[in-house]
Image 1 (cartoon, rainbow, N blue to C red):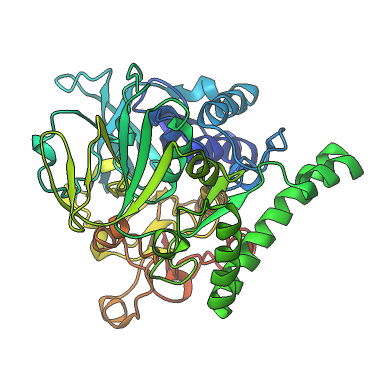
Image 2: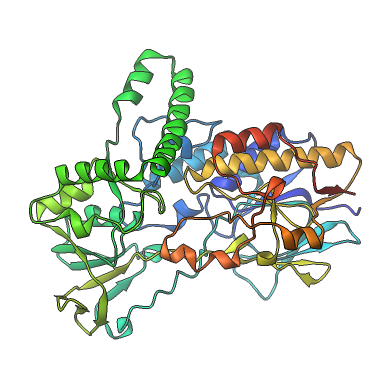
Length: 486
């Protein structure tokens, strides 16, 4: 094998990338080098990109934060700028920032069988005419699951005719003043449920326009149990206990949704109706057509969405759009809305590997035709690792499982005096393998993209379905079956 620029290239300086860097430098093989290649000019990933009003975590910060650097505050949900600062501090305190190369966008990666390494094509500072080239033994993709540059294109009849402002939350203009504006937020997911209460005190009025509702639960942002744990136990122990309390209670809720969905739905309705004003009915505005957790349940921090509805500054409309005119949104019910600004909070465009063009000896690697091994390596693709997070838990938990698998595989290669490893499955077995998708949530923007993602199967090719089992498998389970080392 020829000399490489670094042993491991971590693509992305978001949550997955920073976590991978820490685990690799602290628990990986000694003496190996790594670099973090980040397309943006700052640490943060999602938390550097998204700037819409009220941006915050949509799962508890205690499990979203790094296990090796616990979140220090006691609030359950954290605001985006705070998360970005926390990530910057985590990187700096552990020397990770010295390994990050900003404004380095990886556009192509080719596995060279001759050199036994990856050849990376990288655009630096946006200069696509003069790319730079690196070689690396291993790649870890901390690129997330959506397109940073292009939002999901949702068909809204007539939207191009609208004479007011149209904003996608992914690219919220930092200088936009929405004071005293009539705003319509199209969507019913976590983004819409965050934006509506945040802007309600400044706009003239904000309407959440949804085709169908989502389960929304008021969540105290500082739970009594958290306060109790930190008063009763030493700080380090309290952090550990609190993290596991959240892991277990979220898992228990999901199991309850599976075995007793009607019971959960009745409880959610009870909580909603306690907080809703008389003029807003639970049905149809908060009565989803699906069972709890077939799509992610949204949290309303301290019931802020319901408070906005009670104030009269916000309303919710459940209807479908007939057309958008120059100055209005006409609904199929006959109702007409007259916004100054339309916010299209309709989802994200899913994208594997940050849009990098992967090739093996010059031949395209067709991602959708391949299975994932241990939910972190692509079939027949050497030395390539990445993160698939959990649908039903914080993304960071899945990052940890993926990194532990990577470190164990790299150590196996070193022990065998090899240079690369790849998951292998015979064509006949692959064709007969029963399919179990890595993503099962039924959100509209997700369903259309599943066909573009890698496949899941059974055994070592099965998806991760919960953190506790996934962590045990990643740290102590089988990482030899169907893995070829050379």
